[in-house]
Image (cartoon, rainbow, N blue to C red):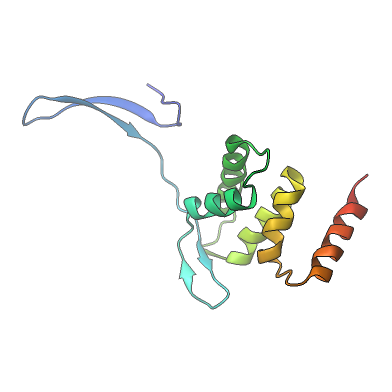
Length: 135
């Protein structure tokens, strides 16, 4: 039987005590390792990605489902890269693009850290650039 999370739910019985229980089986596909700026390699961590996006979206009208959808899209894109390793900058670029479309304030919050907007003038120029892109 299919589970809502995309797995297969199975009823099992313990051979020792006879107790019945359910298991959910999911296909687990590998995501590439992320190459950090300092050269270290790190396993992709979906929860870390979601935490960063949630922090950028804090107190904004962004539904949790939208954040999960962004994480799903990024994770799927990483799996399709076809490489064993990708620069962590690739993930950051994906987040920035999706946040720009999702919520402009969340985008600016994320960009402050990710793009290194460390003074008021750089923040202002990024906002001006965003405003110029709007129809």
